[in-house]
Amino acid sequence: MSSLLIKNARYLGDSVDLLVVDGKVQSLSASINAPADAEIVDAAGKILFPSFIDVHTHLREPGYEWKETVATGLSSAAHGGFGAILCMANTDPVNDDAAVTEQILESARRSWPNGPRVHPIGAATVGLKGEELTRMSELKDAGCVAISNDGRPVGNTEIFRRMLEYAADLDLIVIDHCEDPYLAAKSHMNEGATSGVLGVKGQPDVAETIQASRSILLADYLGVPVHIAHVSAKRTVDIIAWGKSRGVKVTAETTPHYLTLDDTAVNGYNTLAKVNPPLRTPTDVAAMREAVKTGVIDMLATDHAPHAAHEKETPFDEAPNGFTGMDLALTITY
Ligand code: DOR
Ligand code: ZN
Image (cartoon, rainbow, N blue to C red):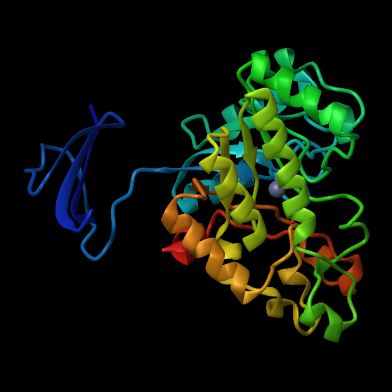
């Protein structure tokens, strides 16, 4: 039997002790006497949380191991306090086949047998090309817990409709990265005053809102659920609130960066602030915070999307979108 006693932690405003025996929480109270042989950790000045679940990360395995592996991603998760994470399908090969799902799960078991746990998100269409639906039931059997076309939004509304129906039949949530592919084409940041001054092609915030509206209207029509990924814009919050008020089964996430940064972070052609959806305006940041408070946004995720340093050390237009998130998510958000 192994025991761990965490003493003097702050939990929901109170000072508590927490006893863990053989990896399971046994008791939580104001004061617990240490069992013999217990490892004791003094957590005075620290806050105790249950481990978090991150519903949106990008592990880069298979295919982009110079950016991240399942092992390094799970290490980052552990440092950030995440006990379980969901990883997106934009690997190479894409996670559109049970063999890829199994490979990700096997890498996780090998590198971190006691967790954090990884739950893959399967691709909605083959190769994320938006043309042919994947064999979602096989992906589910292999361990996928949700379906998404990730950063390659499905342009064809008929295919998107079938995707929602098929996934709902299998009790799989569709996670929608909302971006009108035409309005957002070849953009590198938010369209607005900052993009104008920098001379960088921007995408209007309404590119996100239009796609989210399509999802919500279809979810309403079909009576199926849909989850809106990394909401960045006030207009999108408004349309989600409208869907919820109608009883549509729509849920939504935002991330620490949309709660804390606006598009002026891109000034100086700062590729580290290049992300998709792009950082928006202070008005959007304020609306995101409000939406978390009011519950229009149901959950926070990170969209942890690491790249190698040399990939970000390029002209702005050539740099990839995304940055790490799990390590600092709690600190930044708290
Ligand atoms: O910033 C982003 N990075 N947004 C995405 O949608 C994809 C992600 C990535 O995989 O790098
Ligand atoms: Zn993402």
